[in-house]
Image (cartoon, rainbow, N blue to C red; front, side):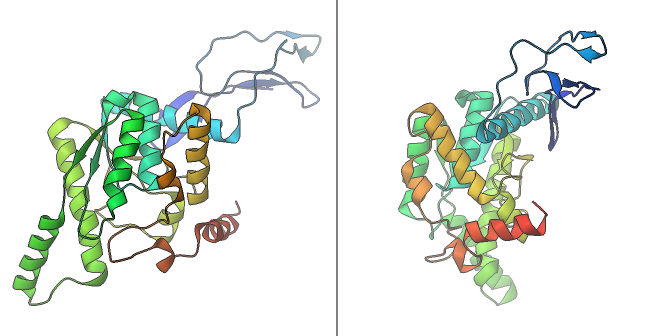
Length: 282
């Protein structure tokens, strides 16, 4: 049997190549490298494929995931005519990993980060974003949203005689950030990358028209625990802190309310991820 697979991204699908030839006894005689387009000849004699002299090196789990996402972004940007991307940088792990992967795929000079602090943002939201972008060589802009939130909230209260509170006020902040990113995209032609992971998206821990704004989600098929694993792998492979330790060790928070933590609404991510994997049959 010959298995011939294409290489490249088609929106959210990524084809990894790795075409191979299998003999009648089920043994792989020849395999092409993954995530690369190659032209090769496979020889067949005496009823069997001739085995290649040196088998292709097996990719680690983390390296396979990284190559998958990098190829997907490269092809999506090329097919859609984008040469640059923009990401909202919260100082958290999801946006940090998204920025690191984007820089690897397109080059740091084609990646822009925007930090958009509100009244609930921690000091680390800005300082950790600065450290991250410095390590990656990425341009970082600061666009505070506090006055926008206050103005919107006041006009809402004036119009409806009811102040914005709770989830409505939390989602407003995410939607204003989404609007800023889309405005930057429209003005500069940069593709907005969303930063939601599979764990959050699976349980709806995100804001419609807010952090879900964008053309492509690089880590949307990674569970939160896998996000951390891949971030550690990038640092290990680079031999330095591309993603600062402060981002890797801080407790996850949307920072949309005072002292907010993800665990206020969700189980700890290692627990949630096991639930989701079992539900999906892994």
